[in-house]
Amino acid sequence: MGIHGGRRLVTAVVAVALAAAAVSGCGGRATARDGKDAYAGVGDLPEKLAADGTTIVVGDPEAPVTLALYEDPRCPVCKEFESADGGGPAARDAMLRHGLRTEYTMASFLDEKLGGHGSQKAVNALRAALEEGKFAEYHEVLYRHQPEESVDGFTDARLLQLASKVDGLRGPAFDSAVRTMKYRDFVAESEQAYDQAGDATEPRGPGTPTAVINGTRIPVAYSGLLYDRQRFDLLLTQIEQDPESWADWRF
Image (tube, rainbow, N blue to C red):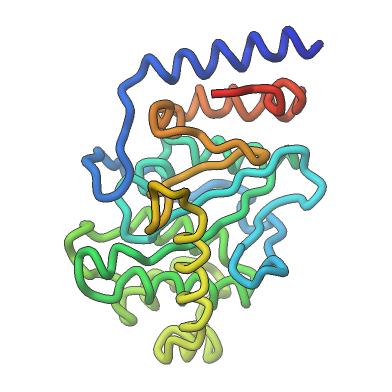
């Protein structure tokens, strides 16, 4: 498809998304859905810690599309994105066909906003899961079993209980890392990276979830796109097939 045809399709997809009601980020109002229990193949996706020390990269490093995703484990709107009807499964489908890699920056600002340490503990546990090659699977489990936003439910015991749902994750190294907050420096540095991702009007970060596709951020006004699996899949597929159409797009 030529650049003009590609641009027309991208324009159409985004226009439909704009017509949908915008969904605010955490702690805005959201209607989270539980989604399915598993996504086949997610455990086979390559994953690593990027050279910056804070970005967790999942998917084919040669994929033509990069999705930079900012999330907080306690954020219910992130859960909506990760639900069966949201954009998260569309992103996984694209990763499984080697068309997309996702770069996760895990924030923990909701602990300060709401009280408690659940986000920090969950981010630490996710980093420990990465060490075992189980980040992608554990990430899905945590969002499927996310406690209410106002409840500081990601305790050590709960995180270990949920880790038992991921084959091969539990073990002395992982369990100790969760109980001792082994990766507390990673947690702090990840939150700092999230804060720095905001602009002058966002001194405490861009909100969660925030998605940046091949360097272009999805604005809040178009955020309905992130919670519609079909539309998000159509957009990712189009960008995968014709990256130039997205590179020339201007919101």
